[in-house]
Length: 265
Length: 261
Image (tube, rainbow over all chains, first blue to last red; front, side, top):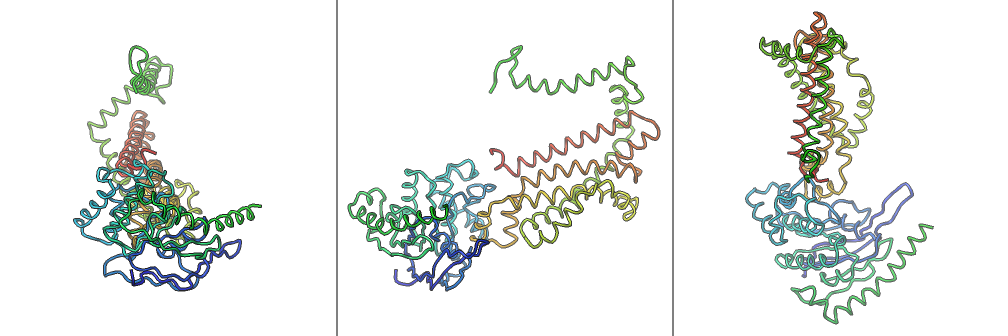
């Protein structure tokens, strides 16, 4: 975990709307090491999704630089697991999971093997030919994860992938995600508003301020891997870490709320 | 769900029987009225007479000749009007500049009654096959171009984000997101366009042709063969039903994901 995979220097984002300029992200400087499971926690509207979208190439930064170490030839730099429903309703589970590989014109035999592997890892083999509307929310999000992993990117970007799920499903999917991640140990950038999720999954947690978004604190998570979600949560150190992160976050959440109420008034 | 109903028939069967019953009863009343002189048979010949005429025309090959002439024009018209409309409509949905450029032209020409431009089309393309094909093409062009554009604009932005993030090229975005996402509305456009095509082929053939179902009906008026006129009407109506059934079947096949909604 020594070499740097993602390097941000004074990266900022300002949106220009009719109501005027709106700073989503204040200049941010950050290094993310290769193989790090990097978590971003913050109140809603803190610009964390904007940051991820910039990394994904879906948004351009207003100033500053973004350097991402180039992947080996032929491999994609990043793949994103989007928040909410992002599966193409007109494609089967298999076609959805194969999307990245198809776009890169990989041979059909290879696609079959790789996609088959990840559908099996996510427990979706039986639903190969099903369409997204025939699946539950949790299953859809699993397809979305399989789609990102099957594309074999250098970096995985995950934007609150489990936020719409119920608690039981969430824990199962977190376990699954950790298991699949252990196979490859890719660099991950994972956004969440759940402190529990951040401590459960991450190597390092960045807490962001409410609007405009800024890095408030970066915390290392000392727990060894591989982790088992429920066992981890039973440890006293786990509770202490969650508690201390909450301490940092509480002010921000309250500030965000005050801002919301201010703008609503 | 089958519920027992009247006469021990299931609700389903009764509904289907009622569906068939209404036209059958209407035909029966028509037949009786015609035979007993209640209605003027110069305008409303008995269904049995129409059917006899239909059989005669099938046997002497007249019907087939006209039917085939119309079908060929419809086919080429659908092809030459529909395919460019599909591509242009989807492209307009994808590209804002193109939309800004072309949309005013479409909205300005769309309200012009298509039948009103027949003289102009005849002038430009002459009395041959091309003027008929052009009329059908114009008829199907507008519903498809408008629906394809609207269909693409209705696709949620997240799907375009996904395709961009997974490195899709422009052509791949067109093929994997825009086209399938807009397909339900495009097919609605195809149905509307086929209806418009049938209207226009009839009119175009009445004025500027020596074959086709439209010509057949116009000629029947000139020689006062009312039964033939009705044969033409029936064939065109059946064509409309068959075409729309075919599109529905295609729909079930290529947009299975829309069924359960």
